[in-house]
Length: 354
Ligand code: ADP
Ligand code: MG
Image (cartoon, rainbow, N blue to C red; front, side, top):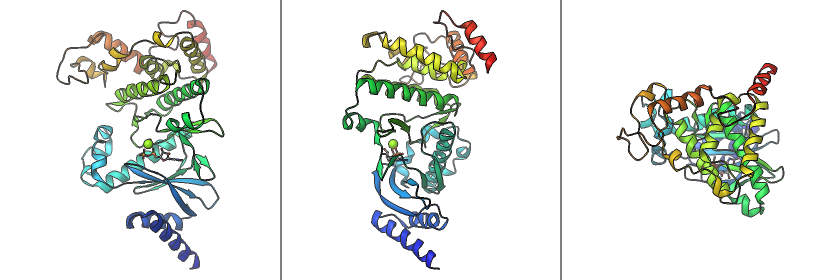
């Protein structure tokens, strides 16, 4: 009895201090009652789509609670991300903002689970109810790890440190795609956290992440690759080109970790060995049509600017695109790639060890 009162009291306090609505209050109350929460503390972040709070579990683990806002306007422009989502097929959720927001929270929960299970530094999700997601806290003693954007200045990160962080980001993208079959779709210096104590890079904010076979996944991946490269290049890091990064991520010939590591070493050496000016230009790649399905290969092409125009852009003939599509999606292209002189035999023997 006394316990029940205390839980209610805690939920009450959290609700008043943070000005939460009644629905949120009821969800928090339930989480307290179920022993998933012990206390809710201050706000870590107030965003357009969600607020994040620091909390504690009964076992003394630090938690982050992400509370999505139930405003339909904000979620409207997310339509692109749910195209092809099974549960959106009847459009039932679109007209119900509460269901829709709950779905984003659930999606983030599932995606975080997949990421953390694949060994990626992403918060382990602990609970999700309606529009409330509970996950592990990145940081310690109530201090959240900095967003990469802020960490650069805050910790005066050197070019060398940023180079290492760049390749950590590349690794996260690769693992996400190959091991979790996901494309982040909103990857940037805002959704990467740098925990200075351990020098670890963490990825967050994966509610909009899509399956690798989502109709827009490759476009999202290309955009992620471009945004990440531009951020790091701005600080003098010798990055891959967006195309090179994209190719590396989708290369299904690099399933084994050993092959991946060897390939990344080659890529790093290549990047270090060339000047910024020698990084291949991405203008054409960024505008080239990306096929969504194999069937679509034979259909008309479009560029982002010209939805209706069937003219292919440079290099975009149906046959060359089909070959490209085949190579990067079905994995016919091997880790050795076209540009590599050595390795065919080496790759074979590696395969046998697996
Ligand atoms: P959105 O961008 O939709 O508002 P995010 O998931 O990116 O939501 O979270 C917003 C901010 O909250 C992040 O930039 C980060 O500072 C903080 N944050 C989110 N999740 C965690 C977490 N698990 N641990 C620590 N801080 C977090
Ligand atoms: Mg974010």
